[in-house]
Length: 468
Image (cartoon, rainbow, N blue to C red; front, side):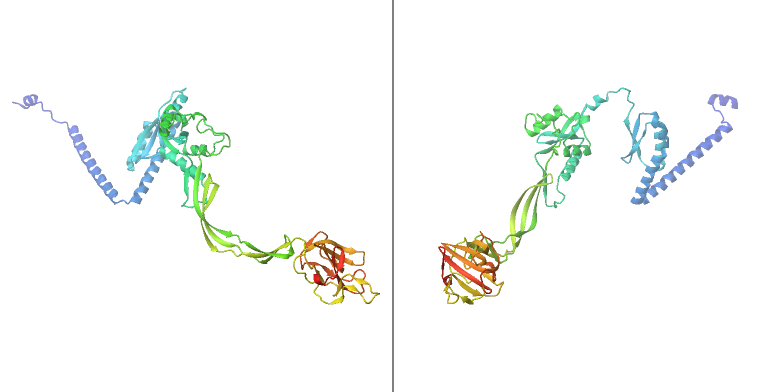
């Protein structure tokens, strides 16, 4: 068989010189690429194992920054699309970009170069013009209602947000001066109720706290309860319809917060203990007159006081215990009992005891009758009441007594003090035994300075010696 016949029967075709060269180049290129890929994987695996946690965090942050900065192509599509994608790196939301293949592909390529895990999630798609958003806003969704005694006040998305609202309200309505031992609680049954309500009813934590703290002028549109909420609250509270009457969350203007916070704390205070006064009756002092003999001094005590606040205002305080640190010192005072009537012994009217002229007829001067006794003393010597009484007259007397003081001592007894330089009492004034009533002098019919003391009973002068 010749070569031509054999080639026809076996179908053999010798390779062209050019085709053999291409096959060889492809084989070598594939082997070289596999070798580089293996070396590249080994290198980055070693780098990954050696890198520290702080360096890893920095590298991740740098990768995310470059990732977001490298997505410059998203800017060109912002005004050209209504479809957007949320961007997440390692499960963390970092932003959003237009849902455009050019943008997302470029970001994935950059992320691959920095070994950053990038994922996309659709945000929304194109919405036709004239879409009925009001219908969407009224569609029911899961929510959590903050309720007081079975009546809903506000709605939040989750229980965590509801608790955040309650914490804000509690802090705002609690006195700042309370210690860590204080008891703080809401007044009434404040509960969190899982419900289904319209989307438009749900508030952010900040807005919900504002509604609860400021009732007046904060009525919100569409804050009525759904039937599902009413049923849930009724089942929880065991009542027919917890929302009957006034709409939940709506009150009169300036009615204050919708919730009340009660705070209770026991504090220690140092207080002053008042002292008492012991009175000693003194008939020489006019009735109603008081003279302190021994001053008193307050004591000191420590009290445990339970204080109760409502929305920051003190509404009640109660002393639960008291410990006396220093006892008070009692004061002693004299209290007059003289009602203007002579009582007990009589006293001498002057510091001087020199009698210069007695009672009765005088041997000198033609034997005239002297109705009292004269006590020799310099001008300005103090003169005292000899017993309790009421001043009848004090001033100038034209009958020869000069400046005098006349006292009614009761029971028909009168005492007269004449020839004074000045008086220290007024008519109608009650005086006590031994009280200063004036000063001696030389006024009227006299030959020298002295005190004329006279006693009258029933208007008739008697010997004054028993009354002094």
